[in-house]
Structures are given as structure tokens and as C-alpha cells.
Image 1: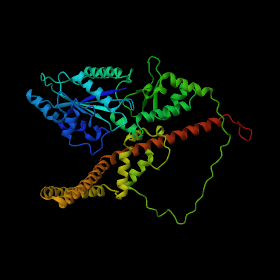
Image 2: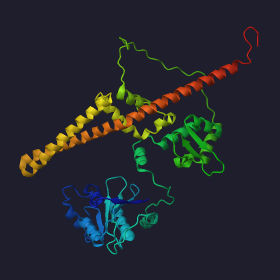
Image 3: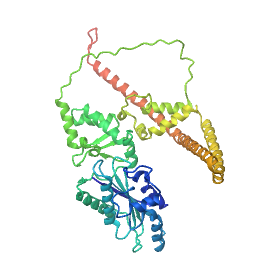
Image 4: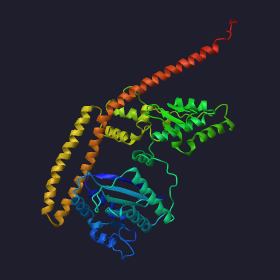
Length: 470
């Protein structure tokens, strides 16, 4: 099963080539670090057709990997190319455990030769640093033969995937026979990989909860509406859709997974009708531990300002208290929008609490101090760079060590500055969201009270009073 993708690269040509040829990712595990020498020697060794083993899985098609950048630039200059797109960067990823590094690289080289070998210069590099071995392709945007550009369009992408599938079948590798459609956005992929709640995972949670409490499609619709979702069961449409409050457009339910097709949802609801559930008449009450403490909470100082705002928002979002099982499907729709930003909000909250920042003035003062320190370190680093060029031996090593310390400190300072900027940009929006959430909660409480009052009065309407009246 090989997955293929390609995209254009603007800016510098050496960046994608350096990334593709990264020795740490392309090194053959048969060789130790002592065996791996300078990059130029390695590339020369790797492209030697007489060798049966490779130290690095990097090959050039119509170019030498060691001088690929220069050769590609010569081709551009030859044809007077001044295009903004300098090259194309593609990849071919294989199923985990299905291929060896040698086999993966061989397939990648054959794919590059079939796809671009007659007109373009290509660097093929096989990365071994993940469970799924994958090939990287860096393709010159200009043909060295006729000076014409390669076009990254749907037709060429389909051709790339077709030829990749043909090679996979030739090598008895699995092929995706029925692709699911458009690729998943990178931000969504990373969030799911890191177990962060996303719009899709929250929608699945809501649908699962609604199904578990429903015996008919009408029940299912009512349960979802209580969680802020609307379902379209239009019989004239092939697929049912779901839309949450605040969404721009609806989503087809089957795209949430195999258990969310029209037929599967109906089947799961029907299963509830046949399930007999037994419950105790009275649930066993949990034992309540009473802890007595001395003193009073009257004089306790409440946390306000930015700290209070962020801590309260973390509580509403479910980040606090820790280890609390959070039902994201029941969150307010404005809070659901920030579920994928939980890490950023958490880090900003820690910054405010660690530095006891409550006001915008304190935040600005702290940010200014960080920027001042960064400026001082930048000046120190300039002097150390000059000193490093003149020094030798132990003195040079000491200067390098100090440069490393400054670089690490500046990384930390930049992160802190970005967090401050995040608080500046986000705090007003959090206030507005909390105000809307409070207003909606009050309105919901008012409706619940009116509903209970209506039930109470309607239940007493035809009841005789205790004196025998009606």
C-alpha cells in the first residue's frame, strides 16, 4: 500500500534537497556512525552501480545527488527560468513492515524514472526514521531537455499514483483499491495523532451517546439537538448529514467512519429496542468523606484578571480539574471551536500562573523584559562569533559552549514571547465567549424552570384538593 503526494516548493532549492538527503534519515542501519563519512563521499558511493550495498539510500536521476542543487540551477540558467516555483517535493509511503529499505528505494527510483526520467532531474531519497518507510522526490521544476515546466495538476497526480500502484503490484505490495477521497488536513491529522479532540471525534462522541439513548430516529434527532447538532434525514438525499452549531456547512455522517452510515446507525438504534436493561430501584449511595479544616475562607483572595480568566476558561473547556473524564459532546459550541487549541491555551495559562500576571500592563512589562534579554544575547552572540573565528583549541571550545547556551536560552525566550503574544491576541476573545456562554446558560436554566413549572401545574390541574373540592 503506497501513498503518493506532491507539492510545489517556493524559495530556496537547497532546503528540500537537504531535507531529502538528511543522513540521519537515509542512513543504512547496517552501518555504524563511524562507518558513515562525509556526504560527498557517501553520495559518490551510493550512486556507484557496481556496489551491491549502500551506506545512504539516496540516488540521482539525471543528476548526481552530491551536486544536484548546482546541476538544477544550471538547467534553470540555461533556459532563463525565473519562475517562483523552484522545484517539486513528493513522497511515496509504504505500509509498515511491508518492504525492506532496499526494496523501497528500488521502487522509488523506478517510479522517478518512469514519471520524470525522460526530461527532469530528480533526487530520490528513502527515509528509514519512521515505522512506514517512505521515499522523497525532489524534482526540478524545469526540464533540462526542453526548458518546459512540470505541472503539478490533478492529471499528473493521478498518473503518479497509477504508476506507483503498478510498481507495487509488480513487487507484490498491497495497493489501495478504493481511495477514500480527499486527503485529511495536516492540522487535523496531527491533532488526531496526538489524541486531541477534533470536530470529527466530538461529533462521533455525540452520535454514539445519542444512539445509546435512542429507540427511534426521532429520539436520535432529539438527543443530538440537545447537544447542539442537527441531523438531516431527507429521504431524497442518499447520505444523512450532521451540522453543529457554529459550523459553516454540514458533514456527511458516513465520513465519520464505518459505524456511521445510514444503515449502520439505523441498525444500532434498532438493537436498543431489543435490549432489556435492568436497573436497581435505588442506587447505592456513595460514601461521603467529611474532612474538617480549621480557619475560614472569608479572607481568601480570589484570582482575577488574566489568570482568573484563563483558569476559568480551562475549567469550562475541561482541561481543569486534571484527570476529569470530559464529555466534549456536551460542551458549548463556542468551546468546541477551541478544542484543537487546548495545548496553546494550557501553555498560556501556565505562563500567567508561573509569572503571576493578572493585567495587560504586567504582561506587556514581562514581554518587554524578554525582548530586552533577547537583544542583549544577540549582541553577545555576535561578539562570540567574531571571537570564535580568532580563537583556537580550548578557548574555541569554551566559546562554542557559551554559544550553545545562548542559543538554547534564546529558544526559550522566543517561546515565551510567542505565548505573551498569544495571550494578547486571545484574551479578549475568551472574555466575549465566556459572556455569551453565561448568557446561554442562564437562558437554558430559565427554560428548564419554566418547563418544570408547567409540568407541575399541569399535573395538579385536575387533582381534587384535600377538602374534597375540584
